[in-house]
Length: 328
Image (cartoon, rainbow, N blue to C red):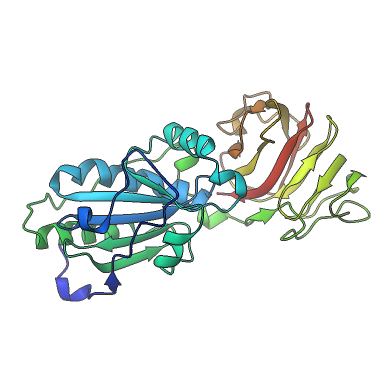
């Protein structure tokens, strides 16, 4: 059922998009050009697992309502420096089947114009350029679609009140929130916690690390020669590895070779063995995979029951940077 317009009062007005450093899938869009259309502004960054899991819904709305007066505008605001590289962004969005216009926001100008603080974030704008609703984070997809339908209905457009029916797959599948015992975990020393290789982190210098005798839940360690920076950890010599004791259905790692380095081969193990049916979409059953550019890689996706498991990734080539673990 469509909501009454009074339930969604004006929260502000659509800010300028002029601060975008580039546009993908479209010529630059302005407020004046968007006037008269319902607009959904979707903030994200291409390695953010929360944004990735919301993407199938935004993509479906863009497809369903485009000819009914809806324009979806993505805003790609990078968390990591490599997410500002247009080649990386263009490749990732193509692989993710993002076809709606995307403003690349490397200077955070659009982010600041909206006073935004979240990935993902949705802002719902009516045909008069007024922000009527917002949603931060994952979830509430039915409510969000009903808001879009209400705004289109206000504009005099007849829409089918039924909602999109999708079954997200792969990395886009919803998290198993009921059995999620591990949270986002950064590798760089600026935000790292629960690192337990003997001797701790040696910042900004190449150092040979060793694994501890055991890992407790959510502890992690390195082995081999790594240089741990504030944001990523760089593998200096081939054969290094990274281990994590986790409790979740899926384990992802944002990583990839440095810009001047060839693709990096790796092998994943789960409790010391090949992952088999617990492999993620970016590895085979034997745990083999290749990181060919910096993005999020799904390495484990296991069936229940979910317990504490020891994950290990060994890199057969040097030159990889590891940024953050995420789970789902």
